[in-house]
Image (cartoon, rainbow over all chains, first blue to last red; front, side, top):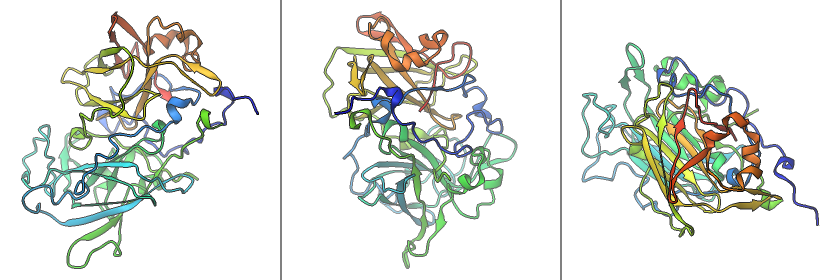
Length: 240
Length: 163
C-alpha cells in the first residue's frame, strides 16, 4: 500500500486562465477602492478543507422556488422569460444536485430591497428571488420576468445592464461561484464597469445568455440559455 | 483554454437572494463558542453589506452570517476539531469566505484559535509569512468567546488565500 502523500505532494490544482475572473482592484468600479486586498494572496496547500464538498440547505428547495412568477397572488408585470442551462465543471462533467440561488430587479429595474430607493415602481407580485437544484445532467430552469436596467451612482449617468445574480456552490468549498447573467445585445454592456472588470473578452461573453427558440414556449414565454462552468473538483487527500 | 464562467460581485442586494437562517442539520459536537468581530474596509470602516460563509471542515454544511450596519458579525458554533487527512494534521479552524458589494470575487481565509497547541504544526499557517500569521488567529476573550476581525485592506490586512 503506498504511503499517504503529504499535502505538499498532492498534484497541483488546476488554475483558471488569466483574465477570467475580475481583478479585485478595478478602479472603474469605485466600490472596489477600499475593498480590495493590497497584499498578495497566499498560496496554500489544498487540504480537506478546500477540497471537500459542503452544501447549503440541501433539500430546502420548494416545488415553486424556481418560478419567480407564482410567488404572489397574481402574475408580475413584465416580459415573462424562461432561463435554463447546464452547470458543468471545466472537464465538461455535469454538476448535479447543486444549489443555485438567483436574485434580480423587477421589470422596471427596482429591487424589492430597502436599500434600493430608486423611484421606479415596486411590483407587489414580484420578490425577485428563486432557487433550484440541478438535475443529474446538471440542468436547471427558472421562470421569471426580464429584469430592467437601473441607475447607480458609480459615475455620472451610470446604468447597470439588465442582469440576474447567480450563486452556486459546486462540488467543493473552492469551486464556489457568484456571477451575473446578462442579456444578448444589451447596449449598456460595453459601458458597465462590473461586466468589464473581467479582463478577457471571451470570458466576459460567457456571462451573456443566448436567446434560444427551443426554450421559448409558444404563446407563453421567451427562452434564454445560460450555461455555467465551475472549476472542477480536485481529488481530496482522503481519496488518494 | 479556460471555459470557466467569471466571478461577479454579489452587489448590494444579496440579502434578497442568499437565503439565511438555515440551521445545520448535523448536530455539531463540541464546546459552544461565539466568534465576534468586524468586517473592515481600507479606511477602517465597517462593511455593512457583507455576507460571511463559514464552514467546519468536518461537517457537510456551509453556514452564513450577515454583517450588521457597523460591519459587526457573530459566528455561533462549536469549537472545531483537529482534522487528520492526507498524512498531516490540521489545527482546529473554520474556513471563511467574504462576499460583498465592491468585492468582485471572493476573499477566502481561515479562523484559527489562539493558544491551540496544534497551530505550530499546521501546514496552512506555516505557508503564511510569520509577520501576518496573527491575522488568522482568533483571540480568546473568555473560554467561550473569541474576537476575530476581517480587514480587507490596510495595515493589519487579513491574509486571504489563493485556493
